[in-house]
Picture (spheres, rainbow, N blue to C red):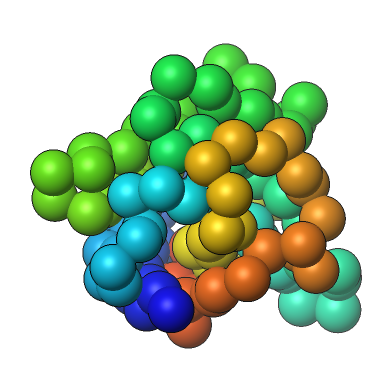
Amino acid sequence: QAQLVESGGGLVQAGGSLRLSCAASGRAVTTYTMGWFRQAPEKEREFVAAISSSGISTYYADSMKGRFTISRDNAKNTVNLQMNSLKPEDTAVYYCAAKAVRYSDSRRPNEYDYWGQGTQVTVSS
């Protein structure tokens, strides 16, 4: 079992930055692959980034490469998403997710086992 709580969302102007955090609890969360997804109104949930349990391997959606950085601190049971050069099209609810395997490059939401409640990110033009 894992519980995930996101924080750090808000309103930012285009070109600005935000840092999202996900606090994870549960006995085995440090052994899980962690991911970030987002969902804009009337759109499907889409993959943003993922990181292996060790933090060595990271994966990004093409549109986020070079702008977003995922990281984790297993000592603090947190996963972060640093978002730079934000665009209005990045506006969405951002979700933290956990997949109960150490290493996975899965980009499919239905392959993740645990989800947070989401945090709103709004980028104004």
